[in-house]
Length: 376
Image (cartoon, rainbow, N blue to C red; front, side):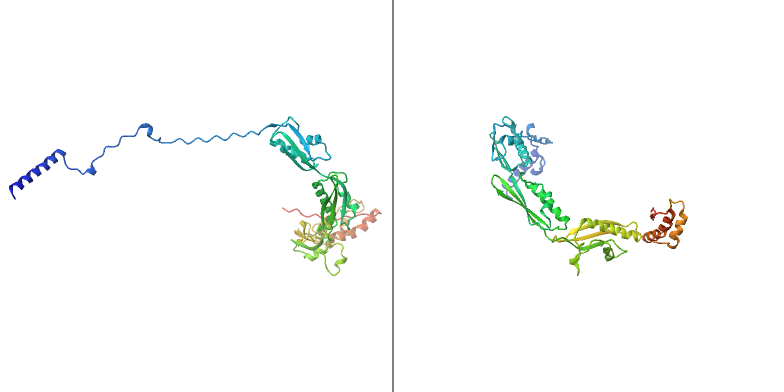
């Protein structure tokens, strides 16, 4: 190594040594601590918990607009005077009104049943116009198509009459009353169509077109709940019979009759009672029209209950010469253990009536009575 190069290395080493001593131990730049940034101004900081936004107040109710009636004119009236119509509407000039007031006026006018249509206009100006279309006046009532029921039988059921105001609601009510007459005759397929014929001076003829239809027959009788007796046996006890058969055209009791339906229930009760079923009852009896509305299907739901037999027997007599002991001997109750109420009633009447009448020297009635034991 040359002397000049050695001199250069010494000077360089001395410079590094001086730099190390002046700057302390060498530390990587990334590891040196960085002073924290100054905090922002106080007013720039967000609050820790923001308050909830206040609910918007509910909108104030809009008060109905109140106006004053300046004038009231009536249009379309034929028989009624304008003042009469205004009085029905309960409106008068100078009166304050709202939309509800006019709605009530419309209801009041329709409630009179004098008008087929009513309109009130001019509400925005106060100059009200009541436009009406009056219901027509009845000129006459006509019946067409009635053959099974005579006119003099139908007329009393019709409440509409000549010189009265015609309303559709009254016509519908008359139709229902006429249909009820036909239902009583067993004609449940009957139809009635009310029609009006317009005449001059706002008059009408009211025409009831009647389609009577055939009598509604009993197509089938169903019995539900019977276990001791078959359906055919119970049907024989009824007044009502089903339609059809070889001699069906001779039957008169195969049409549906609500009164006959009630009588059939009594017949069933009497039959079961004579067989010892004292608790028997008809739970329900339902008559339904077939989908074609021509015939009926009757359904009975019955509850037979237990069968009772004769147990202990007591006798009572109001006759001095016929004590209870003798009555027991006369009716021969000892010969009928286990008898049903029917057999008991028939035998006891035959056995006791003649001796009792002889004792009184006049006809005497005997009434056997049965009582069922109470169940716990």
